[in-house]
Length: 109
Image (cartoon, rainbow, N blue to C red; front, side):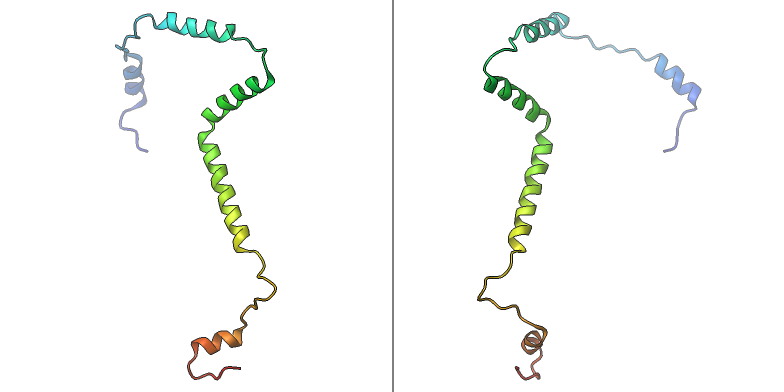
């Protein structure tokens, strides 16, 4: 990508940039309150409650990974179903029977 400004001008522009946005009122107090609540949550409890919290936290971050894993399972399952061997009574057509179906002048075997 081509730089439009020389490095010195870009550095001066970036150093002069001031952020005018103000955080919401009592933002810092809300952050510290949530941190204190998280620390106050008991880590002890039933093992299934801890596991449920862990899994729910993990899946919230891994939604795309779960979707990809489900798609992979679906593709592998469809491939397995498509590649199963034919039943005992079914026969696989050979080249002569195929040619007989597409060539009108060839006599059937």
